[in-house]
Image 1 (tube, rainbow, N blue to C red):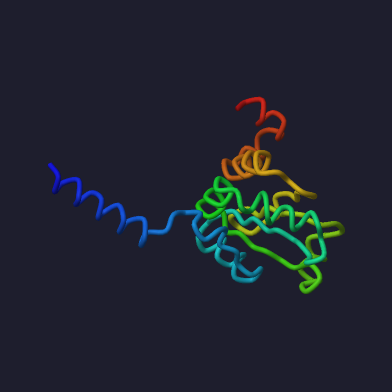
Image 2 (image 1 turned 180 degrees about the vertical axis):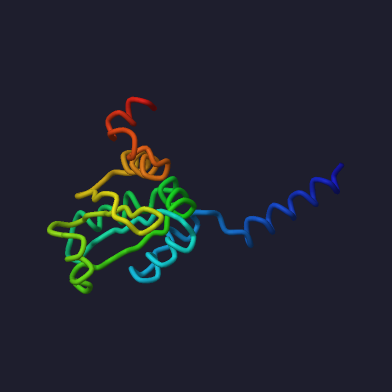
Length: 150
């Protein structure tokens, strides 16, 4: 019995050391070009976050929303995540009509624009928005209707 516990303990230590969790290293961010191509190839929706280094609410999203374990795991599993510095990549920001920051965009699996999401979004709201997009509910109901159905 004691040897079985030792074997299990060794296995758990090995597992924890060598098998990273879905959120251990944070959100896997891609460049715009790589992320949009990967989304089409993997047939996943794309989440694009536009930010600037000087933007206070962008930093708040990075420190709160994008550090939340549930958000990290959900984005890494269900979306291809793209981060775009709107000051450095002005043409991309202009193509998405970025006028204020932060702003996020959702793209369908084929690369078509679904919708934008302006401003800071706290983790509890973001997870519901991600589910709304991932499950394709935006095609059949409003977000308020989706929230009432939960």
